[in-house]
Image (cartoon, rainbow, N blue to C red; front, side, top):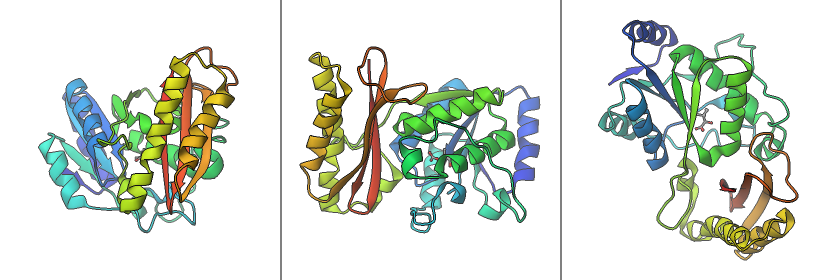
Length: 280
Ligand code: PAF
């Protein structure tokens, strides 16, 4: 496994790899890897010949009051985990390598970025699509892997890839959960013991939504209210949003007839967590 920090040296290497006819799999991450990331790397290992994992805490996707400065980092551990999974290259550039002085180009996917997390985190998805487009240009992957926990992100990246004819296949892998159901996230490390316990209400609320749906309920409002009740039952939790939306255009669905994404964002103390399920 080799670690690259320089874009130009990585591009040179990627060109060689492509010349040899290898299929490249890219797993973009912000590091502090967990089992969710590992599932993406393992899938890439199955599908492709050459795996690149990027580790970059992308400043462009954090708002001024967000957690950029305290985002968890443990590169030594990340390298060890990647090595163990047979990753070929880690790309971990400095911010000034990705956004040098004079940087002025951003990718903005419209409409589907205005809702859900996009509404609460203005500019977030502009930062995500920009960095992902740059990572695609640098690593030239055949397939790129994303987790379904960030469902809106995956939908936006698919849209961008299609709209800009990027020729990269996007694979979205299932959410990996802790034993108690909490969706794996690097941000879970922010939770203290009490908050960790309260955070279980998120997954519980989605389970109860699924039960309600399975018992025949199709009115989104009733399912959303059920979710809110389960989460509000816990102290120190603040719902950012609960929504039931179409899985392609992310528009609100009043009555579920096809596939629907049930997405939630909740503040547990000072930590904002997201989770979702698909109802079909
Ligand atoms: O999901 C993430 O970790 C990030 O948003 C991504 C896709 C690596 C872009 O910085």
